[in-house]
Image (cartoon, rainbow, N blue to C red; front, side):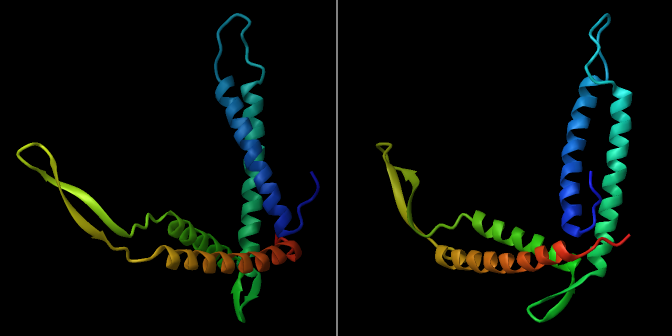
Length: 168
């Protein structure tokens, strides 16, 4: 493993560590017990436990450095200065809003509903009008505007991540 120097390198390494932790954790779960004789698992539990401890230690150290760096590094977005951490939070919440909007079940128009049955057991219908607080077109416009803002901010954050050196 090469030395992690920038925020972007730290983010890549954190992703790798999380993958390695998942793999070691799975191996631990399948190596905790076995039947005798001769069915010993391919991985030794105690060795995996040590690996996991080392991975967690590196992960926590990197996350702490990243949090400190992001809090102390300022960027300029649309003429406004903010911390890199603030920009990361704004990105996360903006993505959540876009996902919420995309998931809205917008319905408009008219619908026939059964309200009763006549003496011959035939349905009696009424037509109701369905009204939505937000039209599909309005929602799609809000999604597009949100995605555009996310892409712009994400570009600024990625640029900062590549040139920002981790603070010890």
